[in-house]
Length: 406
Image 1: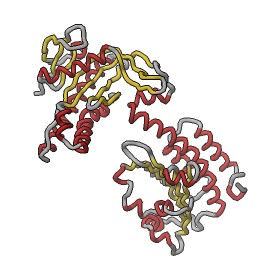
Image 2: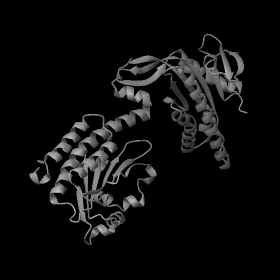
Image 3: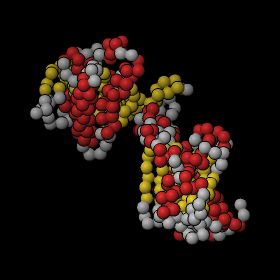
Image 4: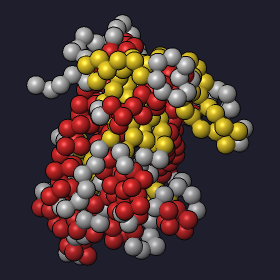
């Protein structure tokens, strides 16, 4: 790096130092990008717009973009899979750059040229932009990074009459690479968190990342426990083609697990077509609050199921149903398995009891059953169904059905 990059100027060196220091702390990438743009502008780079794009390994979105403008306009967008091939993206200069073997591109917007093939640049030029510079910062060997789309993309739009000077371009290239260090660490951390959260649940995933990975690691926790199962799943699996049954399962999980997640619960496991989840007990009146939230999630799951069945019946498909048990108790929350293949889950009598409770729903003709311990937490018009004997539980369980909805 030469002096013409601005590397020897204290104002730019301080930005470089800040970027490296921030990479060692808690990275909030989009927020740091906004600050980065602001500091570049204050240091004399005539920025009219800064843009960041990163790929994401996430079940809900495929990429994130951040846009900065000097008037305070800041926008962060998480792109869902269906927008990954949108026309606006395919007509962008960055998409064009990715189709080449180049790592950067620069357009003078004050003269006619290839930039006029890109609607976005035509619009920026009409708003006063004079220059556009984009760079790809690869996270690893170039060919491998291209294949994996493992990089971040930065673009800088200037509005000075003379565009960006060569020194300013060199400075953006240099500091953009420094920002790439932050982006790479963020991608690695977020990928790890997204993967473990998607496969283990948010709480278990965080515990694993914090080092709780050895066989036997765990702790006793109080919780409200949810266990639900799809009704007639064996008959449905036999009757439907595998692709249709898989789609049905995901619809059912959206009703049940989706409701749990939306109400702050923690889905621990999908056991075939069953869902095991907990609502954490925290703070004053923690059991009551968690029980109230679990009831709200159960009502929401029933509402979603009713809407789903309307659609299924309209399409000539079979309606589906589920059984749900709600219980409370102290569970061992930790790793089980063998030393080199562990699974984070809950174990203990309460976990066994809630599964047995759900098993009674079909016998008693109820969709939702709760234990006496659960019912005692909330003053509701519970319907007492008496004591029931279940396999694997020494004492008979007194069970209650949900109050009727007026």
